[in-house]
Image 1 (cartoon, rainbow, N blue to C red):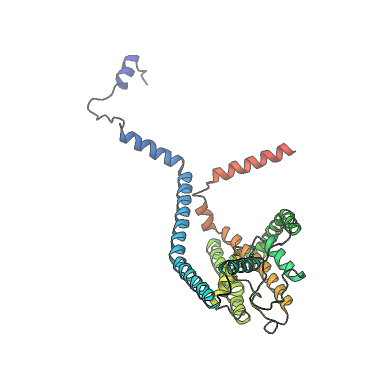
Image 2 (cartoon, rainbow, N blue to C red; image 1 turned 60 degrees about the vertical axis):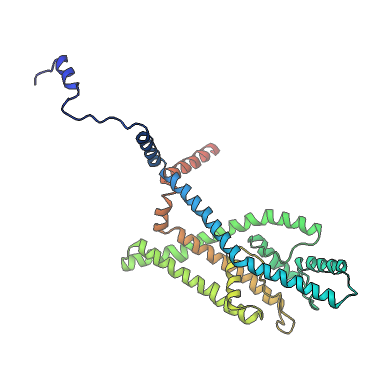
Length: 328
């Protein structure tokens, strides 16, 4: 093969006048090219920003809907209370407005601490079983708020009790969930996959759906029916609302079982409160198992990679390995 001279190489490197030359984009085209390249490099960050924006929009939408639904009820209740107070003062001229205001404030303050003044109520909020119920709601971060410590010593002990107890509770629940996921999810899915040769991803999705339906039946629908029978002022929707709010650890405190019972309706209030405590702990554990099962679905794992790619996870694992080596 003949070796080319420097002149021939220079001639071949010149642009061909017959071939159209493509000029680099200027102005807006260059900016768009830079933005597209940046979006390609940081696509996961863009997806995460969109996810955060969607979450904020979801919060704002929820606030608008709650305000539209609940504000008229609040305004109507305020008008009714003002009218009732006006009628009481007009029918009882011996009672001044200031004395009625002081009585109402005292009654509301006692009600906030779980002490009822509407009837001859002898229910104790701080006997052993009620204290056990309070401890369980505090350590699981449910916190209904219907019963709170009254004394300074009780408030101080509650802080210390939660500082030590909440991490231990979370650790205990995480260990229990990992052990139960192996028994409830991984082993059945692996067995059915080997037995029937069904794709593991499809089998895992079907198993998660079945587990969700079973959890809803055992810890939402059936308990809601039981509370409807036992709580005379609760409808089925109220009972279902209480079960969901409790097992999701929201714990608004507007519905608390056993608060409206008399001694005739419930001759064993402590046993009833103890059964509710066991239900809340067991139900919370089952809900956490369901959430862990759903989080391990291949479909959700692929979706999460859009917001947290494997490169970030590798960096986290490498950082953890570095920390472990430093400790060695």
